[in-house]
Length: 337
Image (tube, rainbow, N blue to C red; front, side, top):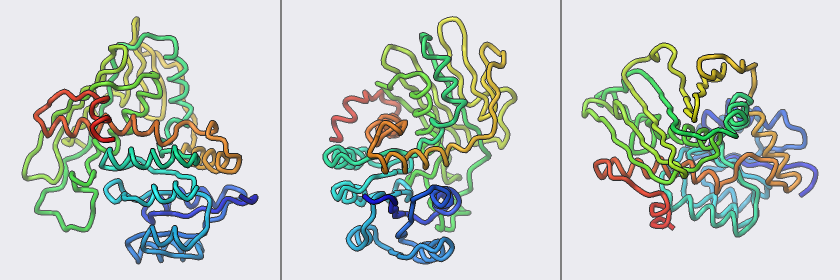
């Protein structure tokens, strides 16, 4: 590799246009050489907007025709196929937006290709780079975790009769429900803050045929060591109940509350107030630096680690399909090797 990191984008959606491409344009010695999207209008428009020289509508075709060092794979999870596997086999470093896939077996296959090739990899769990989560992690480092809670609230989902078939965001089966997207975030940041991994998953969904996505769901997890976690998503009200933080971690002798990106409270006393910070840019800078120096240690996660934040959510989906059956993560992963 020369001094400049050549990057290609697989996906020309919102994350590409508003976040990752603008970020990379700020990073020295980084060149975006190609972009690909099955939506030809989106690909062409993004290329024109950012003066990206080569445009493709098929990921494998882009990999076969363009030489580059790193791939930003930011298509939706349901659209992931074998593009990342091909990239890894060709020695191309990989930035994979979360959630990685809808199929844990595909994620395992991608991870195997990454491990075999030895390329740099990371998953877009950007909040690990945000100081507020690092501060919470530091505080909890010597605590005996007992239970953790994550809560998310949103307004009622769209009615089925409003479905125009023009967006995957309202499709439960394509991962459009926030319990999949932010569900993976919740698991990852709890893992990050507590240092614990999930060993068992169970989930229940409340669905109503009038709506495109579930009205509520509740995930129940068991961490290694015995601590428990609940992750709840309620689509009923656009405003959260007062003073309910998204993250709450109980330990022997007290509890930590992480209120958005604003502050940390311990037993209702503020111990940390956050300042403005851009974790997206921090992660993009770290990824490019890791690629330039061939140093995976500059990153706060790799693709393999990301699987342990994805698998509990997918196991929860399977649990819900089976009426709330408890699923052991080790068996779930082994069954999908």
